[in-house]
Length: 636
Image (cartoon, rainbow, N blue to C red; front, side):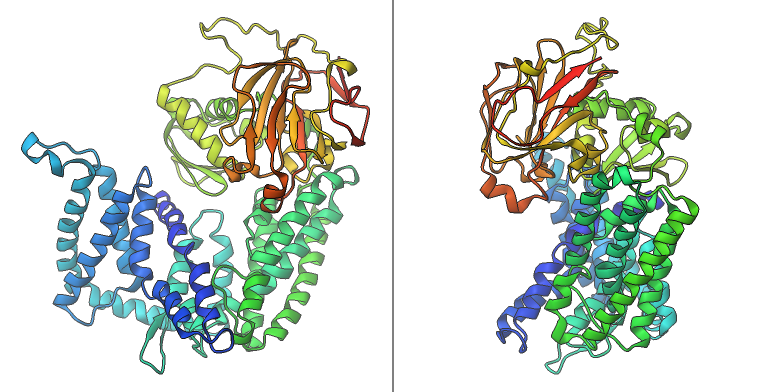
C-alpha cells in the first residue's frame, strides 16, 4: 500500500506542474496587476479543471511507459464517473477525488490491457485502443456504486476539511510538521493535493466557486492563505540559514568543496522555494536535524497564523511567489520579519546540534568514509548501473524499478541481499527500506540516467562487468598495474582558468567520487583531445565524453554542471564512439553563450576515472592556453 501511495504521489507531480502557469495568469490579469480579466479567466481555466487534469496526469504517471493512451483513459474515466454518479445524485461533487479515482483506474487498466490481443475480426480494438473502452465500462460500474456510497463520504470529507481549516494553530501546525515529515517517503504530494485543491469553498461575487487553499487565495478569498504563509519563512530564510550553519560547521579543509554546493542550493530555496536539495543533504546523514526542521516548520506555520498573516503561492514559497502575490497577501512585510527571526533560529539550532553532537552534515564526513568510496566507474552510466545492480543483490533480486526526481524506487525480492555500504560507497546519499520489499535509494539528480542504464542491462540480461572482455575472459588490464602519464603526454583540452577539483561547485566531483582530476573554467568554445588514444564513450546528450589513453588511463571530460538536462542543446559533437584521436583532435564545440544561463556552472571537471593507487599532481593553475602541457603528472 505504501508503495502504491508513493506511485500516486509521484504521478501527482504531472498535474501540479501546471500550477505555476495557472497562478501567473490569474495574478497578471487581476486589477492590481494588468487588469485584463480574460488573462485571469484563462488561468482559472486550469484551476477550474484540476480534477480532469489530475485524472490525466495520474493515469499517465501510473502507466509503465507514460503513454498518452493511459492519459486518454484517465480523462474518459473521469467524465464517465462524474456524469454517471451525478445522474444518480445531483449533489455529488467529487472535486479532485474524482480525478484521482479515474486516474488510478486509467493507469492500472492501461498496464493490464495495453497489449491485449483479439481475433482478427476484432483486432482493430486490441492493444491500447481497448484501454479507453474497458476504462469506461469499469467506471460505469464505479459510478453506479459511488452514486449511492459517495454522499456520506463526501459529508465526512467536508467535515474533516472544515475541522482542519477551522482548527486554528493546531491545524496549521500539524499540517506544517506532516508536510515535511512525509517528504522522505514521498507522500507529501498526496496530502498537499487535498489541502491545496479540495478543502474549503469560496464563491465570488459573480458566482464562481473555487475549492482548495491555493485556488481560493489566488481568487481573493479573505479566509485563505493561512495554510501557505508559514512556509515562506522556512524556505526563504530558515533552510538557507541551515546551509550557512552547515558551512560554518564544516571541516576547514572541506569548506571549499561544500561551500559552492551549499550556496547554490540555499539560493535555489530562497528564490524558488525548491527545498529538496537542502533537505536531502542532511536528511539521511543527520535524521535528528530533519525532525528538528519539521518541528520548526510547524512553529513557523503557527507563528504566521497567530500574527494574522495570509500569503500564498502557485508553485512554492520562494521569493518569486512572495513578490508576485505581495499585494494579495495580508501583512506580507510582517512575514518577511518573521522569516529573519526563523533564519536566526535555524542557524543557531543547526550549528549547536551539529557541533555538540558531531553530526555528519556535508563537509564533516569521516575521513575513512571518503577514502572508501568506489572509484572504478568508467565515467559512463553503464558502469555505474553495473555496480548498483550488484549492490542491490543482482538482477534477480530486483522485481521492479522506477525513479522520481532524486531516488530509485524498487521492489526487492530479498532485502538482506542489498549491500547498503556499497551503495553509499557508490555515492548514494541514503537507503530507505520502506517495507519488506519496497526499497528507495537516494542517488541524486543523475538518477534518471542511472535508472535507464540499469533497465537496459536488465532488459538484455547483461551481467557482464564493464571491465570484462566480450568472451568473459579476464580483463586485459591488471587493475593493480601502474599507470603513468608524463607532463608532455597530456595537453589542456581548452583555454581557460585551471583550478583544483575541490573547487568545483558540485559535491560529487569536489569530493573525488568520480576519481582524481582537476577542473577548468573555459574561455574558449572547442574542446580538443588532451591525449593520444581513442573515444570510449560519447554521452547521448553530448555534455560529456570519455577517452582512453594508449596506456589504459581513462579520462572523463564533463562539460559544465547539470548540463545533462539540456539534452544536447548548445553542443556540437565532432567525433564518434571508438574513434582514434591525437592530442589536439577537436571533440566537442559548445555554444557557451547559449547554455551559460541555463545551468548552475560551466566549470568543467576533467577526471581520471580508473586510477588504482596512483597519485595525481596538478602543476599549473590559473589562466592557461589550449594545448598547454605539463599540467598534470600521474605516477605510483
